[in-house]
Amino acid sequence: MLTATINVSINSTFGGVTTELSTETDIINLDARGDNLADGQGSGKAQLHYSESITIAQSANADKDLAGDLSNKFGEVLTFTKIKSIWIKNTSLVDRIYFGGAGAADVPFFGAIADFLIIGFGGSILLQNPGADGYAVTPTSADILRLTHAGDTAAAVEVELVIIGEGTAA
Image 1 (cartoon, rainbow, N blue to C red):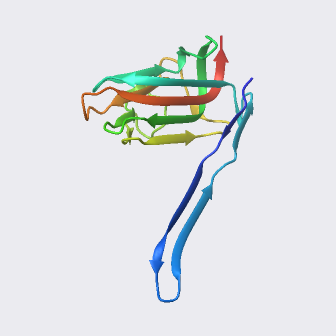
Image 2: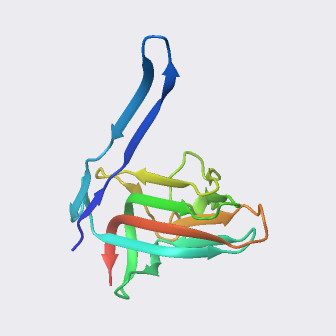
């Protein structure tokens, strides 16, 4: 049984501009909570959780087959049918990674099959689609999540990956 709460919070203060009469500040507080996923299928629901630390060699790919190639911490083989939330963290401070670009086999996170997103040094992304549709995973034709080392240096890059979605565990 899965329950998940995904919280994103951004708090930013810009200030220090002093005039004769006052100090001006600009404060932004964005608290975008609200994605609580209950166990099951459909809108606001998920059944599977996967997390992994991945090491990717210079200019290499780490392809994750989301339909039957991943196992959870209990040893169950996971077959995702929909992705509701994905978090990718590039822990390298000297190398970039690319997310996507696996061609026709890519899970459809992007508008075109060859598209990818660059995750910069120390950067991360969080994609959420908690509605009934999620990001569809289709076995053998749209089930690959590709992470690629951009090759900025010869060092291997470490990536943290968390996926929450619908499907089966066996």
